[in-house]
Amino acid sequence: MDPRDDLLKLENQLCFALVTAARNVVSVYRPVLEPLGLTHPQYLVMLALWEQSPRSLGQLAEELAMEPATLSPLVKRLEVQGRVARSRRPDDERVLDITLTEAGRALRAQALEVPPQIMARTGLTVDKLDLLRRSLTPFAGAVPEWDAAASVA
Image (cartoon, rainbow, N blue to C red; front, side, top):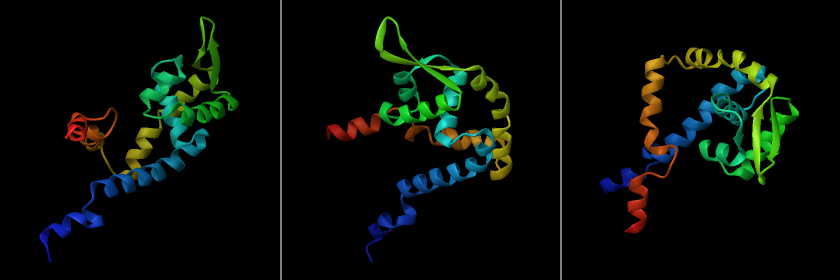
């Protein structure tokens, strides 16, 4: 057997480990977010808005690494729930601003309980979660430099 065959084993694939971990993380968050009336993607939108509101749909999409067309229905559902308001900019009607409502701001107090519950469910400390998050940095956000170099070759 060629030793390179191990490179193609499913259990040795980074992509498989990441996709299954992502699915499992969402499963851990689901019961914690349910009492808040949020799905995991909606929670991410609210986190971004709690940091800065208002934001344009484009700014939110960029920060969350989502397509605006994917994000738009999430924001609409949050608006129906009364947590955000959408409005067009008077000076540029192409830009859709997303603003927290009073209910959306108030929800933040309840959301403060989410991280401790996630730590309790996973058995991970703040330091271990931070280490895990930092180790994923090369795979999150903007396209890394090593990808750009590979596409040139």
